[in-house]
Length: 125
Image (cartoon, rainbow, N blue to C red; front, side):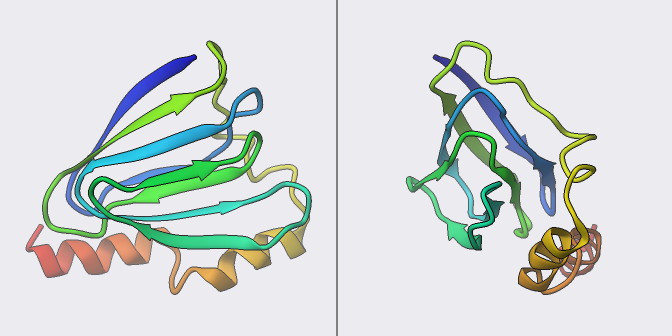
């Protein structure tokens, strides 16, 4: 297995990415996150909120993200069922057709940068 700790500052985002060799179990140590993932097999886009002491599972190969829309830092621990889960960031959205990108877009109220802009204003950052 492999594990990592993620620290997201106020209004921070862990950009959409995928782990082609592992399923991820994501535990919220503190803070609240907006999370989302898109399963590569054409299943629905899933959006949810993850609160302190809750867990989310991102299936192997699923494009996913975590976003802290609060004014305080948030921490999560991610565990993987592989010692080398790999992370693909830059190419994550490159191979998708436009309908897939649209599927993701309609589930986000605004694109992440706008959400971050609104959060930063609310938090006085």
